[in-house]
Length: 109
Image (cartoon, rainbow, N blue to C red):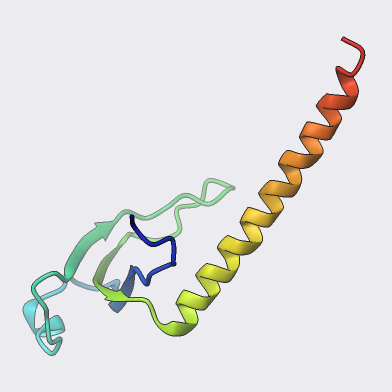
C-alpha cells in the first residue's frame, strides 16, 4: 500500500527571462547559460497590443524564457502542504454546511 505522506514534487523554475525590443535573440545572448538536457526553451515574437482606447502600444517584442524543472525547496513544500491542509479543512466545512442546509430543507419529506 502506498504511503499517504506528502512528497516533494518538481516545480518550474525560470532560469532566464528577457525581453528585447530591437532585434531577435541570437546564440550569443544565451550561450552563457549552462543548459541541462530537460531545459525548456521558449523564444518567440510577441505582437504589439491594443489599449482600451484603441491605441497601439508597441511594435512587438522578442521574448526568451528558459525553464528548468527542479525539486521544490523545503519552504515551497511546507507552503504547499499547509495550503492543502487549509483547503481541505475549508472544503470539509463547506460540505458540512451544505449537508446541514439540505437536511433542514428536506427534513419533513
